[in-house]
Each structure stands twice: as structure tokens, then as C-alpha cells.
Amino acid sequence: MEILLVSLGLDLKNSDQQNSYIHYRFAIIIVLAVSLMALDVRSKVLSNFRYYVESALYPVLVFADSPHYVSKLVSSQFKSHSELLKENEQLSTENFMQRADILRLKDLESENAALRRLLNSPVRKDTQRLFAEVIDVDVDPFLRRVIVNRGTESSVHEGMPVITDVGLVGQVMNVNYNYSRVLLLTDPSCSIPVIDARSNVRAIATGTGSQAEIEINNVARSADIKKGDLLLTSGIGGVYPRGYPVATVTSVGISDSQPFASIKAKPLVDTDKMRFVLMFWNNDSSYNDNFNEKAKPLTDNKVILHQQKVKDLIKTLSVKERKEAHD
View 1 (tube, one colour):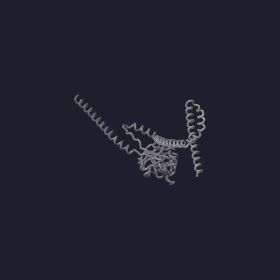
View 2 (tube, helix red, strand yellow; view 1 turned 180 degrees about the vertical axis):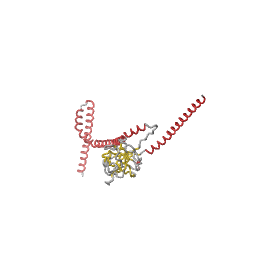
View 3 (cartoon, helix red, strand yellow; view 1 turned 60 degrees about the vertical axis):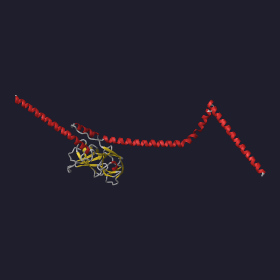
View 4 (cartoon, rainbow, N blue to C red; view 1 turned 30 degrees about the horizontal axis):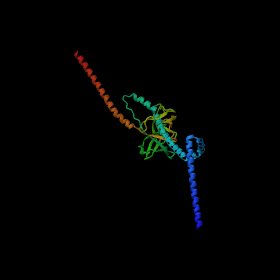
């Protein structure tokens, strides 16, 4: 028992000595650290040593910070990529609509020149347009129809004309809530009133079922239509506004045994490759109403002016007659 107590006392004594040694060493380290800091601040003796140590430890610091750097880089890349995609989509849409506007430039110039020759001619308002994307095509090889991602939710209705930045595509034939089916001008059931841009000859273009060809029906053999002529929408019927490019005449066949010429044309729009289209509301009805509203007062003013001129003429003649009778 005494031996056990003696050994326990020795162990306690050794542990106290070890603790005191640790405290001494810790105090010495603190003193050295403070001394080195004070020496570095006053004399800059350790600046070169610190430079080499930091240079040696730089790869370790980079490796330790790499997860944060990579996550920040990936986040900025995704953000900039999404912003670029959004900006690119917006610019593509604006460019698409501007090119669609250019299609009618020549026809509008000639129309404007004709309107300037009319007195007090009303101005036609711009049409409201809707940008849409082709999401599907009809699987029937004998039908030429596509599906776009706009429907009654976007105020789309049957009969709406559809174009691209190149020319006419067709018209809306069926409408659902989120999508619509578009009848292409190459479909056999599609007929479009057209006019020759060079000779102003009117005709009807009908689809043949072929993607690269339409027919011009019931055109007299003496009609002034030549190969290479550009066909535009004539505006007759009120479905398609006047002046949008439709097709280019590829052949004109004349036979003595046939009363009409056999005319073929190639559509300007390659419907197999198109991705985006423009659907727009035709403002002809509002234009006609506006024209009637403006034409009535204009006509009334002309009648009043004419009546006033007649009254002035009668008054002048009566004065002359009185003078002659007095003389």
C-alpha cells in the first residue's frame, strides 16, 4: 500500500513538472513571437524572409481557395451566358421584324405615290404583329401544314396571315389555346390572290403539294407574265394584305390546245427550313371604317363648297343682269 502511494505521488509530481514545462515553453514562444513582430515592424528585417515563405506557400493558398474560385467562375459564366442568350434572342426578334417590314417597302412606296395624288387621302395604320416559333410539322406527306406555339391565349384567330422575313407563308387554319395550325401556301387546298409586280396582272396561286412549286391558274395566254416575275399578294378577298412577296415565276407554258397558260412559280419561303414566323392582324376593316368616317366630312365639305360656288355664280349673274337692265 505504501508503495502504491509512493508511486502515485511520483506520478503527480511528474505531471506537474510536465505542465510547468508546457507553460514555460508557451511563454517563451509568445515572447519570441512578440519580439519578432516588434523587430519586423521597426527594422523590416524579416520582410525578405516573409516574402520567400509566402511565395513558397502560394500554391497551397491557391489550392485551398480553388473551390470558392471555381464556383464563382462557373456562376459568372452561367449568368453571362444566359444574358447573352436573352440579348441574342431579343436582337434576332427585332431583326426578323425589321426584315419583314422591308418586304413591303417597294409596294408601299408606289402606293404612297398614288395616295399623294389623291386629295385628303387617309393614312393606313400599321398592323399588329405576333412572333411565333414552329414547333411541329404535319406528318401527312400530301399536306403542307405546320404548328406554331401561339394560340387563343395570344389572341390568335383563324384566317390570320402568316409571313417570315422572306415572304408569305400561309394563314392560320385551326387554333387551340396554346398552339395553332398554319396552312402553307404550297398546300393543295390553299389559294392566294396574287399580282405580278411588273405588269400588275392579277391571278390566283394554288398549292400543288410540292414544297418548291405552286401553280397560277386561269391566266389567259395573252397575259403579260414572264419567267422571273415577282408575284405579290394582291389584297383581294381581304385575307392577305397587299404587297407581300409570294413566289417567283419559274416557267410559262402556252399551248394552242389550251385556253389558259400553264404557269409555275417557286415560293420565296423555304417552309422546310423556317423556324420563326410572324402572325399579324389585318387592319383593313378598321382602315375602311376610318376611311368612311373621314370621307363623309370631306365629301360634305366638297358639296358645301360646290353649292357655295353655284350661289356665288348665280349672284354674280343676277348683278350683271340688273346692271344691264338699268342701263
